[in-house]
Image (tube, rainbow, N blue to C red):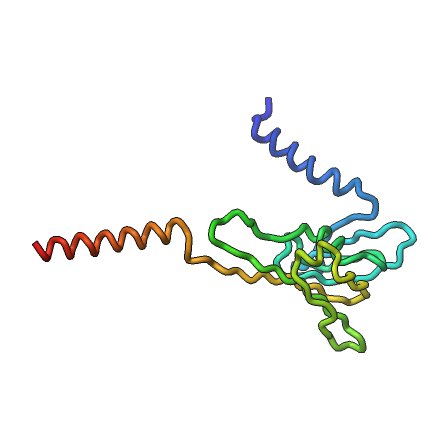
Length: 168
């Protein structure tokens, strides 16, 4: 009889692999020795374009998508953001930048915070073959956390007790 943990692991792998394999035209593979993932999300008859997705996404790589794919859809295909937002005292500002390459020169064509991209405002730009999408996360730590407040109170109490001992 197989070990229950092996069965559970097999079921988890099947639950993840089967839906991805069942999606028509969806595949993922490794490109060369660079370990750059190549993802293809094309339907029969779609005009393919390749878009590079870099930065703080769960699945960075090269995406072959249909012409007319919107930026928010591409970010969803890339697995969304690669961070957890549950940590106390941390504020994250996520910025999405899109670079077009007219004539071989990369030019910043679009830059918006992630929440505006997901809201679709201003209107999302059209993705073109060879575009580069960069998702940057600026992490700002707040000094006003429970741990820091407790440290300050402890330090002040220690100073007060030392002064009280010295003055007696």
